[in-house]
Length: 125
Image 1 (cartoon, rainbow, N blue to C red):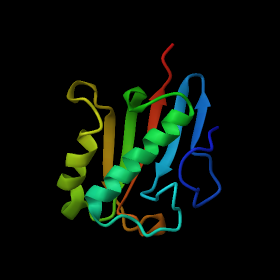
Image 2: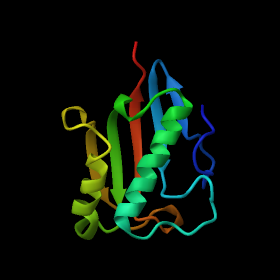
Image 3: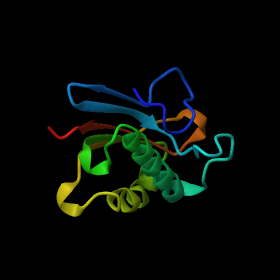
């Protein structure tokens, strides 16, 4: 269990580890240093903040984005934001080492976010 990252919006742990697998709760585009600040404007800024939050949580357990093997991404405006989301998302992973991924459109997310991402990482043996 890790406590780094933004203030949780519900009763959960940011990350839980079992047998070398690290499951990260969906991260929102909130700023850990200013949890009550307004969310960043637009899908690009929100995606960056979510990816940075995932990096913070991974760092809290001694991992980084290179250890991510799978992501689930949720977008509230799928048709409008999918391409712009992908442009930012892909910049966080090398082309030859992108995790498996599912992306779905949803009707709403906590705190009025446009994007949320959860992921599964594997600790090296």
